[in-house]
Image (tube, rainbow, N blue to C red; front, side, top):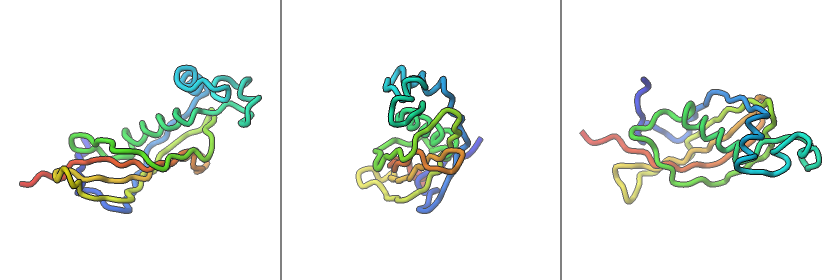
Length: 152
């Protein structure tokens, strides 16, 4: 088992990379049918008449995949789990298409001890999601609250 990490184990500039996730047409359509039923996400035929010209994943679907990669294989395990404190600067500069393979890179861009909870610290992570061609398909900055190493 990988050891759990605390706020004190991180440093500004550190980077982490996830494994990959293959995106399928069926998954794009299923997600869109349930959560984002816009034509460009529902079928290749309907998407052909949109500005995309072909089926593309919802940005929210890309975000859900990115979050899975962020938690399951990019961010080291956090002692007691991290608590999300916010997301800023969310962008989707390029669409995700069926057959794309995504991965996430995290960079620690800021750190500060919590003013209200001295046993915790806040870490801001820039999460960048790439496709198989190293093109950015999503980026965001996540601020997470992480436990500090307990005093001994």
